[in-house]
Amino acid sequence: MADDKSELIRLLEAELDVIESGGYGSPAGQPGQEKPMFYHSLACINHWLVPGHEPECHDDCVLLPWVPEQHKSEALPCHFIPLNPSGDTVKSIEQKGSRERMEEEVKRWLRATIKKLKEEQASGLPEVKY
Image 1 (cartoon, one colour):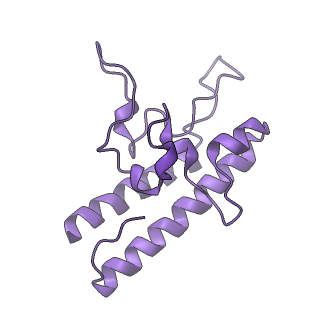
Image 2 (cartoon, rainbow, N blue to C red):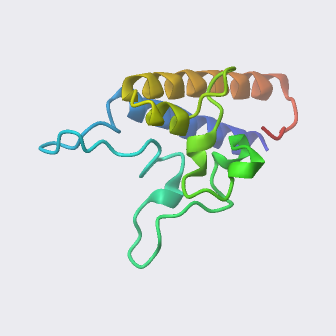
């Protein structure tokens, strides 16, 4: 289990690096064409484009444990992860048109989640469902 948690921590840290380096911004020459959060993500490989395969989320997505049960069947369930105590999600912040705020909330959530996972790993606590 420690190996699973270590891998999850590495994936979430890599995702944080992608966001911090502008990985979900506009592609060169296409202003206003930002990629959806977590799309083609290291943390959610289920959205990578595979020829002949729909870009959908599957039960093995590493972000699903944080998605509320009622949103797990959504096309982009990771957009429904509560990012803060107010319950803001990628979806709710995007609807308000605040890309910068959404990215900041996702980064904050990733940092807090990574910290919690590292603390659990260090203390030897068993895996818990999020």
